[in-house]
Length: 148
Image (cartoon, rainbow, N blue to C red; front, side):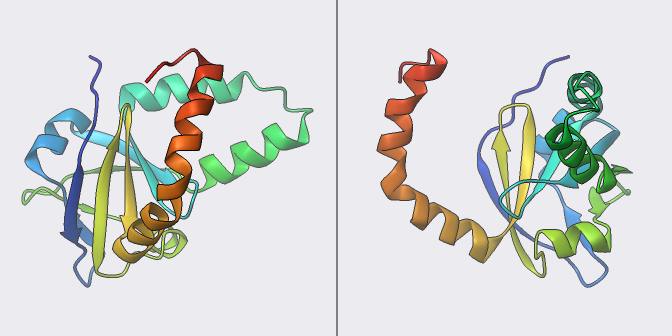
């Protein structure tokens, strides 16, 4: 089952570190899913089947390569399997909340096969800073054989 996540959702984390995921997203994640440290100071969220695909790719990296070892350590050390409670909330562990500077207001964004969870202020700053770069990035997409 292949899901595609897209869109942007604003939500809040409660004092216990629980986040309510929109119903639309919950169905795409399944009963259990993986949250891990992401790049750009956010969290990455993967449905189990997407996590397994990524895990296989990372397992095939040469452990003799320092960059491969470092990235695998970063990625797997923060990974945790989670599930929703009866209210559709997920508990985000302290180490992951700290990594992404999640306090109260968060933004959940769909990025194709994964979700990202951002501190709202960080997401707004990232968008503002990246706005000027989007045209340049779009031009570089041709290198990946993507014509926009």
